[in-house]
Length: 192
Figure 1 (cartoon, rainbow, N blue to C red):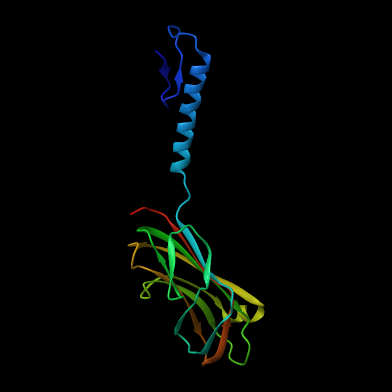
Figure 2: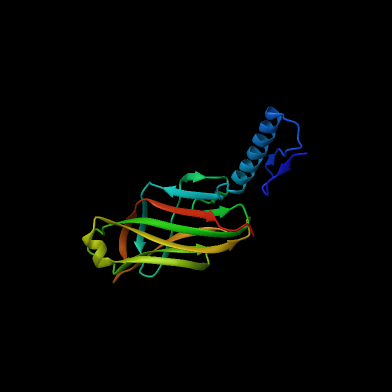
């Protein structure tokens, strides 16, 4: 009777009849089953990237106020998320999700130069998960800046959602701010 390795690969022993084709087939099937199980275990994590490239204008930008960013489509989506109302991304599976939001902010135009421009990551439009920003002086010197924030949160897989906000600190109201490319990338880190 054939023996097997700790991983279950069969091999012949001296008392087995000499049947090389059958032994080779049994070994090939065992290796194939083992490799398939390893492949299945290493399947990609559920992930999505909501994205928008059409400029979004924010009019009468008041210092200290947050504004929701809108998304147009998914750049990629493994079926893990849906867009909700154009500005939220709703994970469809429960678990802990890592999220990264980015916003391309152009150099300010006009007479009111912000002292700070930033992005805010929200869970359910109420809990601030993370924020990041750029100094207005730095922004005024550059053509545009990519502002990125990342965080993580548990989502229930049905009603919890993420949004990306835009905020400005300025000495007075900024008449119009046109925001460029924005994205919200999510990766599910745990299953529950």
